[in-house]
Image (tube, rainbow, N blue to C red; front, side):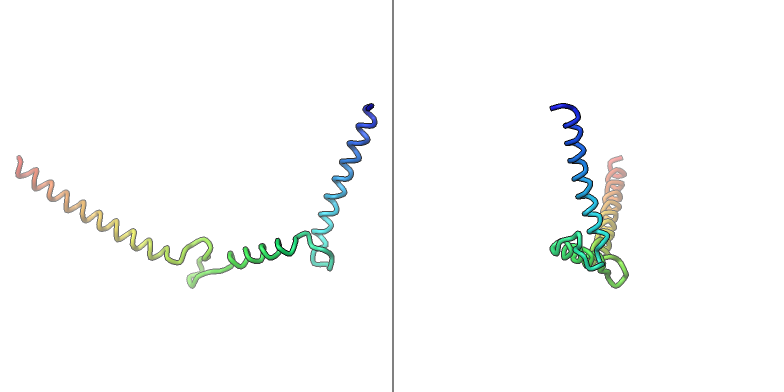
Length: 104
C-alpha cells in the first residue's frame, strides 16, 4: 500500500468521525425544536430524578441532600459527651492532686 492510499483512507475515517460529531451537536442543539433529543427517555428520567433529589430543602433552607436533618441533634449529643469527658477529667485531676498531696 502506498502512502497516498493510506493518507486518503485516514482522511476518509476522520471525515466520517467529524460528520458523526456534527450530527450529535445538531441533535443537541435541536432539542426543544420538535426534533429528536440527544438524551434517551431513561437518561431524561434519571436527570429529572437527580434534580428533584437535589432541589429539596428542610425548614431552615438547608439542602436535604447534603445535610442530614438529624445533624443538629447529633452535634448537641457530641457537645454533651465532650462536656462529660471534660468534667470527668477535672474530677480525676482533683483526685490525683489529693493523692499527690497525701504522698508528699
